[in-house]
Length: 338
Image (tube, rainbow, N blue to C red; front, side, top):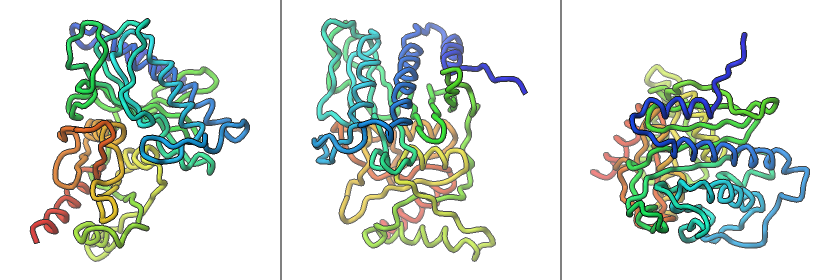
């Protein structure tokens, strides 16, 4: 069998040629993100060999301890993206406010939001972790001025591209620009991302559920009933769902995207707004899953239609195969109406 020479860069630029009037700026952004991913991947892969594990001693905006590799990934993404002339602003899960493009660099018409290292609590255990990103067009005048908060606080339906990178047994870059979902695996021999998952479609019927069942007693009754429903599937002549929960959103959703499944991080009595961040995690993942034929809701409405009010806003999320999300929505609505 011959080598697949559809590289990520080639795929991005071939997609650009299909769009009348495309300027190439979005393509350049995605290419720069792939370069940052390669560098972060190298550091992740040798994390056990160098003095990069452990905590920095600081807390991030959420009061969580910051690991060294978190900040390395954050800094690498900033340094890879600040000088290309395509962005007017950035925002990161690790920074409280928006990140301005330095004055000595040209500013462009796009905004980048990112979670530099999702699942970083798993670093020391050598579990798959990842980077999540989301790209929007600025809504303030494209006149070279700094981006503003309103450029960042746009609903997910305004995304022009989104993606994630899984750093696991291999490094995989998955992205959508609104025309399907594509995955590329990094070949370390070539130093290139090669097409490995063409036009990914999530199975409509799930077989896996991913949720932290240690929080069961805090869940709402509707969610408890749904979990019981998928566990008791033998009563309906079907296999029960398998539970698979890594605790790294990127890894859990990537597996469910390929095999069919539902990932749930609900609101509960302790976290009435959920725990995951709308702008850095839920919106980009919702865009990807919807482009692959799935659904993403907060329990009652579409994730990507939520109007954000804060950069670090948290929301509950139910995301994955369409039939599974339809069913959990049904149980949640029954609970609300009872």
